[in-house]
Image (cartoon, rainbow, N blue to C red; front, side, top):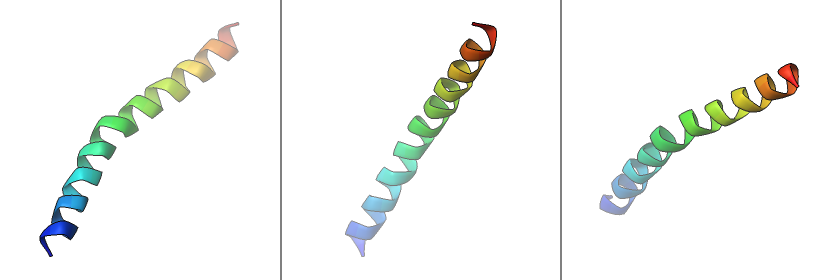
Length: 36
């Protein structure tokens, strides 16, 4: 049970850090392609 909880918190922390990063990267890529 504790391992599942740890995995879930790790995943949520990973998503919280990674998802905005990926969104910004993809948005910057799209904007860069459109402007270039």
